[in-house]
Image 1 (cartoon, rainbow, N blue to C red):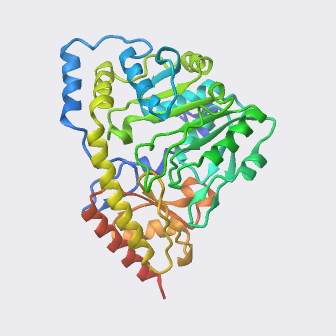
Image 2: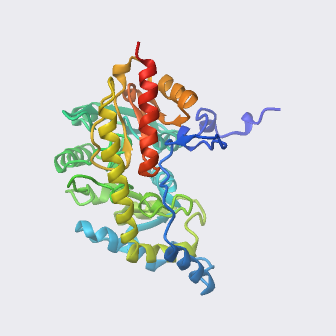
Image 3: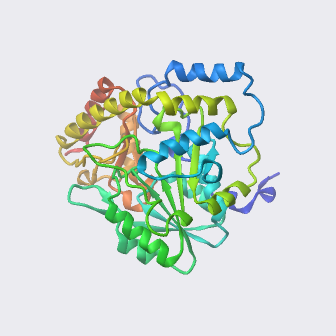
Length: 388
């Protein structure tokens, strides 16, 4: 008997989950650069804070989230010069994925259109489809350095009378850019003119390189009432398995977020208490990670650009590389399949992030520098095999 007749119709068209989130069994010698799961373990003092909170009895309901945790998040966001009310503008979520799901649930109806850039993080696609929204792609355009950037004319062309929202990721995964103030001003002006919501995924803001700065779109004219800022502790504090995130929005949008019937699907209260400790005292650990990522990026970009047929721009933010392999004359999916089989190196085809990603592959630099050296050796060896 098929259970499809019982299924919500949107599920039937979604297919499998994210290609980067498939568990792979133990393969001797495999180097997995698929998922962006930091190779760092959270510091002991944060783990101790979880234990301490549990022993102190913080194991009961905290409807709406622990207020002290929400205050700590508001204080963190204040470093961008923006004051938000922790009680009415901060929503606690179980990581970044729930933040995306809950934000989309709050505003997307069947038939609404959401503009997603191309290429873009694939984790936006299925939640949008689940709510019956139509995904409209707006192609990004390469700058002189080879980085994909938002192209305002392409975004304008994607807007219709059914446009409800635009998704941006700043810093961007997989493109590696940090949005300029001008780019954000153009987007915010369009959002106000055409009256749509902007989802600002700021999960990588602590990992920005070469002097670039994160500029929030939230405080631009007319944007507080139409912006949802999404973030997570997963990358910042290497909490991918602990699931802590948040949404910052204007009071009215936040009220909509809190109406989404997810029950008590949030962060365990003891981990919320540990989150306070992380936001107060975890920045030395974050700096340690930041320095390690920067070393890996500098090394790998240099090595990539020494390989004939490969062009790798220096990312401005996040810890991914998105090199252009179009000069090798092989589709990105076939390249990734081949390097997995022959070199035991798992990377992701650019087409996983949209059609505009063809000719590119993504590497998550979530292994130590010494392993990065082996990664580049394997990558270079495989490319040489492709050359006639």
